[in-house]
Length: 121
Image (cartoon, rainbow, N blue to C red; front, side):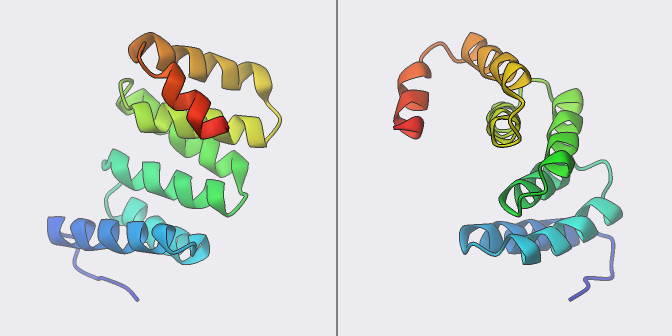
């Protein structure tokens, strides 16, 4: 599937499809469409966020880390990217950098320790 017109509507459709594939445990399909989204809308930080998520779930940790770091460069307050990069770093056994991201998240969200604890339980 290729949505040829590089329009805002194309980005919205790709976002919906990518999210749907991720919710249905289809990271390979999500990644393919996220690649198209990033290619056609390189300024869209959400495209990189969701390509990172598809990479993370497809166990392509290095690509996921690169994408999440790019999101955090563009949007330092993007807490979802902060959590997902930390998770990915843990999965890739990069524990020190993961701690830095968790600590940054907790500085911005002091009420989150209980939420994080439930996620890891």
